[in-house]
Amino acid sequence: MADGLASETSLRAQALRLLLLPDTQDKAQAVRALKVQDWPLDTGTQLSEPLGVPGRPPRPQLVQPSALAKRAVGTPQGRASLIHALTHIEANAINLALDIVWRFPNMPEAFYRDWWQVAVEEALHFQLLEAHLRSLGHAYGDFPAHDGLWDMAAKTQDDLLARLALVPRTLEARGLDVTPAIRNKLVSVGDQAAAAILDVILRDEIGHVATGNYWYAALCAQRGLDPVLTYTQLAQRYTAPVLKGPFNLSARRAAGFTEAELTALCGTPQAA
Image (cartoon, rainbow, N blue to C red; front, side, top):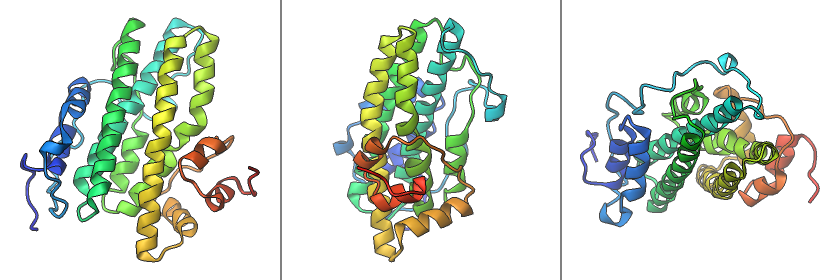
């Protein structure tokens, strides 16, 4: 089908409409409320990108990662800052899932349904963390944040294979490695409520990374590409961050990383 501006007649067009919403609370609520079965997918239309992608609130202030102050989690301000950083990650994750639904046409219907489900779960994560942040006397936007997740999405906006390789399978997969340690820090300062939220997030994120792995492998197979070599090439081409251990190998295996991929990641064969 011809290029066109998004109407409100398909799920993919709805994804773009919601992506443009500036208020993240409104966006999360709308994503969770939308009934997928009410909308045809319209997999073949190349939707035109309007101005304002993604919609953002006026706060938080976005800065370089090096400009973010490090605060001890044992202080009230430090704990709130950490919860805020996690909340911001989930706000970005909603945008990433909505963006992959609307931006890339001509994929199987299951692709769009999979990523919509990811958007729904990311919206829940945002709501849980934002509510906990409010219980600490702060609101989303009270602390500065960085934009690394969306920066990579912008760099890969014309290449679905790169998007799958470098966002869910690299940046979001990093959450599988670091979440257990963050959870333990929160438990150590008595924040059991935050730890319980991170348990939900880690469980769901294994599924989200698995979705990225599934569709990355499917595209590589379709194009006759070696997944490990192709990943290395894409990471170099798009200047992806070099991941450093320790890695949560059990979570990565559960998310569908192959032993060959884990060997390439760690540089040595991995024990069971």
